[in-house]
Each structure stands twice: as structure tokens, then as C-alpha cells.
Image (cartoon, rainbow, N blue to C red):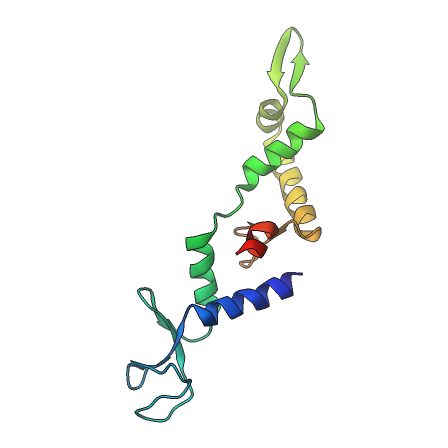
Length: 143
């Protein structure tokens, strides 16, 4: 699924950019520079810049049109769905998520990383930068 979405994002990047001859410093919308005849062209995204390839365009599209998943918030919501809202410690009723995060932050971070990995394996979230940021698959498909 990630490959299919990546291919669609590349197609979108090509649609949102224009071939650009850096040697002549001009657009080449036909795919060949009218001045020098080169077909070794960069991609220009008007108002953003020009560079080789489409990865930078995909990053630009993702950053401007989608909001990355707030994994901390999403994991907290997942925990809230699985466990009671409050936990009793002695005579005190406390928020389960707050207790878990504060009492054992290492365990919390390990569990969050496992949740991210599981969500990615199930295809619910996708990362294009090795896990630095994730996007909901449904948002990417809608894009």
C-alpha cells in the first residue's frame, strides 16, 4: 500500500511542478528545453523553487496540505479506549494516562513506539522520513 501511495504522490508532484532547464534557467513544459534541447531537467514548483527529482516536491505537498499525526495524542486516545478513564491509587482517583506517563516514562515511550510500529504495519499510518513524522493513510488517500 505504501508503494501505491508513494507512486500516486510522485504523480501528484509531477502534476504540481514544471520541467525546468537549469542551464538556460527557463521552464521547459514540453520536457525538452527549447533553447539548448536538453531533456535532463529539474522540476520547478512555482513560488517554492526548483531541484532534481520529486522527493522534495512530495515533502512540500505533505507539509502544506496535510497535518502530521500527533502520535502522542493518538496513542493517549488509544490507551483511553483500552483502559478505564481513571485509576484508584490509595484514596485518590487519577487519570490513567497521566499516571502511566508520569510513573514510568520509559515504559510509556516503549509502548508508544510499539503502537506506532503496529499502526504502520497495519497500514493506518505512513512515514516517508523513517518515522520522524507519520500521516494517516486515509488523509493521504484523500489527497
